[in-house]
Amino acid sequence: MSPALPMTMLAWSRLAWRTGEMMLASSEVIATRSVRLAGAGVSPSPRDRAETTRMVQEKVDASFECASAVGTLAVEQAVRGAGRFWADLWRLNADLAMLVTSRSPAEVMQRYVRSIASAAPAVGHAAVGHWAADAVALSAQGLAPLHRRTAANVKRLRRRAR
Image (cartoon, rainbow, N blue to C red):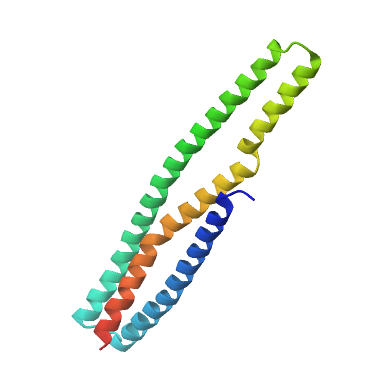
């Protein structure tokens, strides 16, 4: 097992936990706002209209925050991944170029096997580990603004209910 795998699994677990927290908080916010909107009827008070306006603006702001956070991280990950790809490709080409300097067919095979074995992490489990870590990081970045806003709404709406 890759040493990064337990950390990636832990990151996915944290993400699942935060998603659950956000879902519970969202249900509370939705219920509170729904009851208030229904209670306001056809003539909402200025306070009710302000809450509705705030709710709509929060959705727009959160969408932009999420897109910005995910977009920034996705570009960083793409650049980092491309760097890893080119470094691995360069190393493999250098290893394969060494085959022409071999003195015997046995040495060719030995060098070939060694170069393929050194390239395996780039296309095998190590690469999957990078992809999994990148995916959880993107997911966490996208969730963070929503989680933060939802938690703040729960606190604010609970205070107002008192």
